[in-house]
Image 1 (cartoon, rainbow, N blue to C red):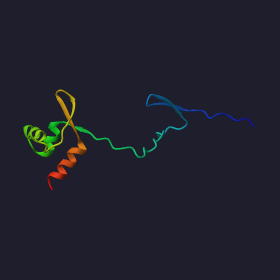
Image 2: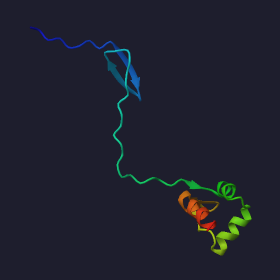
Image 3: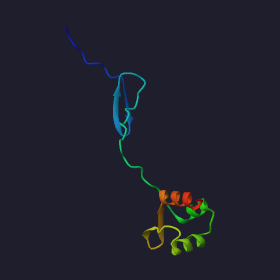
Image 4: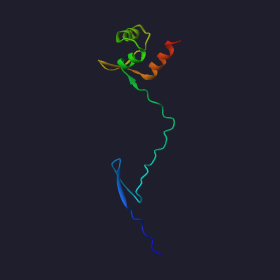
Length: 96
């Protein structure tokens, strides 16, 4: 008895990798779930924060200076950002 290798009928490029398959349909392999990976905070700039809070830019900076609002993270001399979790908790605590 002679064993033959299956003939691969189709080839397809998926994510820059050449994939050979026997059928016309192809299922992408699923990636394993990442367990216990912390959720990353997005970084917000002043226009987004002031839109969410309904205050002016100058009102936001006055609150930062007075200590009512959290200090930002300086990315460059002209760019300051805040973690979205800090802004979410600030909004939640302002109503109390």
